[in-house]
Amino acid sequence: MLEKPKSVHRNGNLIDPIEGTRRSNPVLQLDETFTDWVSGASITVQAVQDDRLELKVEFD
Image 1 (spheres, rainbow, N blue to C red):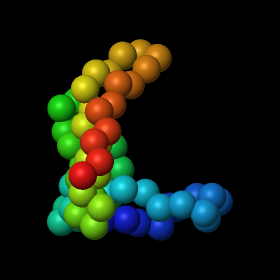
Image 2: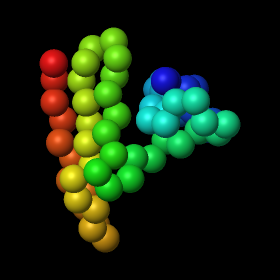
Image 3: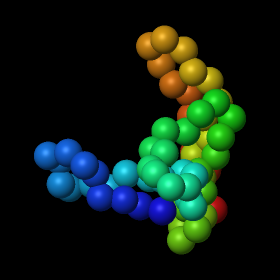
Image 4: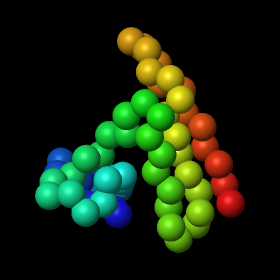
């Protein structure tokens, strides 16, 4: 689910990877996957370290 950002940046949307919750959760945790139901693309968090994030991005 896409949501309008709550900041001065008005050109983008936030991804709410946990649809159906009472508030936005725009952060994926380790081993969580967001799949866009329109395009079929998915993003999975594979590693989290102090200064980097490793993602796996797949396109259907």
